[in-house]
Image (cartoon, rainbow, N blue to C red; front, side, top):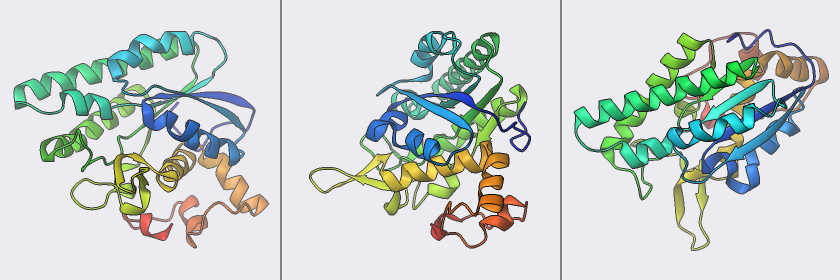
Amino acid sequence: MGDAEIVPERAKRVAIVGDSIVGFQSGYYARKLNEYGLGAKFDQFGESGESTDAMRRRLPGIVGSGKYSELIIAEGVNDLAKRGGGSEENWKKNLSDSEKNMREMITVAKRNGIERILIVEVAPWGGSDSSNALKEKRTLEYNTMLAKVAKETGAVLIPVYESMEGEKGRLLERFTWRRKDGEREWLHPGERGLEMIAKRIAESGYKYQLMNKVLNEGYQYEKSADYKARLKGTQAPSRIASRY
């Protein structure tokens, strides 16, 4: 578990659990994952405003259904929005609580027969109404915690932050959503941003299937000219978002 390159190519069903970003635009990035044809059916369970504590309570009803063999957890921004400020002492406690929630979700999932678990980093969200400089700094600490949990539990970490970050912890402008009044929305990514998350899940979590699509079927996955090389393991520049 945890090795994204040796996933068997067979039909499977994957639950994506998380907050409003998961459910945004009627589950846009789950739909993109289904379009990629990765040998799996992706179902989204996004809940607006949800924290890891609420997700921990909701998860047993999803993984206990017996429908899913894999789980993608995309939570955290609401933990930061609600409890990411304040003193360093309070933050350490809140971060510890979030880590406990993540670990408990993984334990519950495994107990219910989930064979493979993926954890999506928190995307940049600076500039939103609930953010500030301190919370933006602590978002990096939160993602470090997620990486630790993934490593220690055998989950697959899906990196999205670096590919989507613009200035001062904000989304790159092309990944933002425009509200009806024309103003940019810095919390919820727009369709291009949601597609970027789907691409990172496919690249990091379903590399074996995606490699077959690109190399064997000539699948037109993205515009990046060096994608085949990256699939073969060539080191890519850290800021590759500009190529999309």
